[in-house]
Length: 322
Image 1: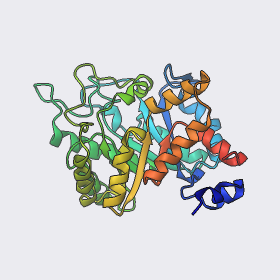
Image 2: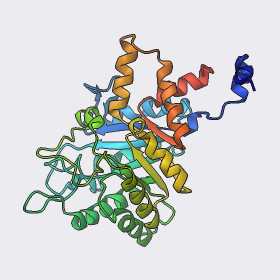
Image 3: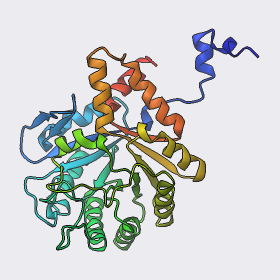
Image 4: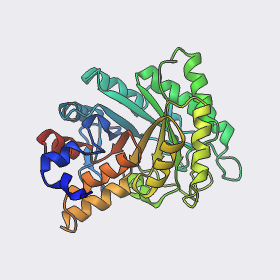
């Protein structure tokens, strides 16, 4: 058989594509900050901005106009403390942001990141004990409070990113007990302790004041352990399973696809985005490398991709560029 026969015509190549990318596969991250008249570009993420709530209308209309179905929200509070109290406050930046976005467009799907690192004065993802360690079982009680506050504000999907043990089960119970059985949980199940988060931490101001997050995020030397994490989260009733980062962990995405019948989300993180953006801007890569990367993530098995590239990809798809 001559394999090249089916590659001779562009329409024939299109007809036999095994993997496709749709705008409905994309989720766009948004950073919300306290204040007014703020649209501040990230120092390390080109074309990504911290936005005050009064700047949201144009942003949401652009996202909706491009056909992007969902956003994931991250908050930058004006004050932090050792219990991350602004994370679950009724007038917290995310809670206000959810309500504002729903006023602008009630149909746009809002996913909320549930963690404490953006809200604690020490920058870790939970409550610290006397020795400076994140205390798992105390932390999940706070995560449940945060999740409930997001649901009450109108969030459509709750996405815990903290990597505490048993947090999916605890959040599920909190939501169910308060009448939110219909709200899905998108668990950051295989979230690795990665160097690729650096630009995000600059943007969201979440760099830990001491130490690192390796005692709760996954060791990148391990693959089978990721399958254990996924299995446990599914047992605790997670509705979506996330792998983060994406491209360095395509093998993990593929293994999850092969072992579980579940909906897989890949987070194409800030470091991955920054590398591609800078390589394209310097002429080292053609911009088609961005689309190729997304296809690789889909081919590995992800159904949904969270990416800062969502807007430009949506524009390309609308133009029929790929």
